[in-house]
Image (cartoon, rainbow, N blue to C red; front, side, top):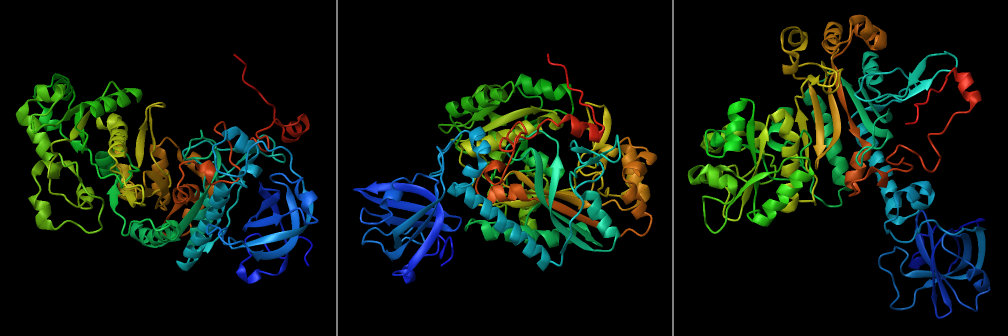
Length: 635
């Protein structure tokens, strides 16, 4: 017999009854039932119930066992007594009557329990991550991650992609975050950078003629942590293709991502035939470029209804600045003062002055609340009739043309066609008695985020969001540039290597802030899970694009010399994307914290409590690297 095991702890079935077996694993828990000890023995593969009674030669040893001891147990597999089967376990009809126990690794007092999934302080969990990873739910999440990555690889290979590994030590690149720098010992005063993404290398692979690349790529960004972004490093499904348009990328990647979600969704519905929504339309209709499409509510522009009306605050705001708009968020079944006041308090907690509202009750179409009183019954009735707050979920077929033309003009003007065409029940049925509507006023570029938060808050409070589904979609046509208020300059808004729509001509002749790029994201349930674009492969256009963002031609050559040179020698049109492995796993595991799906994450202060990183370098290491530490003065 093998030194440690004849079977794994998840192997034994009724067919093994009567066999002498040897198991090794961790003591999950010990139960004393009237002097008979029941020991649940656990390994990576499962759990087996082992029994030791006073007649067993192993009983004295068994009495010394504690949780998380690593032991070897020999014994005979037998049928569990009638009425004691555990249908939740594959081994639930069998137990092992133990004749011999060997302690392979004793365990001290545990700083956190392994049995059960109770909450425990995060700093303890991360410091003792090796114990935390033994817990059932987290262990399952990690194995789900392994299976999801396997599925991604299988599907990418099925689409004709080849996996290549790109360098980790590279040069600094403007990817929108700070680089992690690595000092060079043999080149004093010079530094490598850990890649924020394999962007340049994957484009160079296309220059090299490899055509279809993918990689489960580690990426490194020195940015502040948050729940949906791990500090330091993350992994992405990185993809690039030659001789493709945006449509080709969509056609290749949509079935891959859809297939992964369907495989691991545990029966939850997954979008088929993803909607495509422009960046501008998404901000306008949802208040974000990563909308939760499970939420059926749309933001409505009702500026004209308030223009010249009796509600002075809104009327003055509109007249003082032609850019000011009034946006409305319907709240089906939100027609009570208690709910409206609660939303107003929430808005103040978000740093807003408040949240105006109207609600309807007792059949009064004039509405209730200060805004309704000042707006007047006629205009309030128009709001009630024309605000469709009961829109259905996205569907995958366009609305018939005749129905589209039949929509009232206000509704048509307020909603981008690519959004409206994806919703069922487009006929504006209007709000009804018992409903409410909330208002946000401001310049769209400054207020859209809060309007989006309010839309989400109403959807959650009214239970309009179906949590048991995955809604995927494309967000397209991102602006090429944005204005950096802090540095008072134009900068790239997304990926600097993307092709501007209109090419070199647009870069030369249009207002940079009016140029759109062939850039796109994938969203799922309110998260951005992928981002990509068609690349700018024309040398003159590349130089001009960076020039607009403040980079001179020589700086472009110095910083991106490899790619710039490659473009001079036959560059194919190419494009791709990168999907966040961590966020996809997080969604499919049903958690909202990336630490629950990662092996050894850092904490919110970007510290590895298990390994003690970051740590100080020794004087010898600093001398070898020709580096001197200049610490900030303590206040």
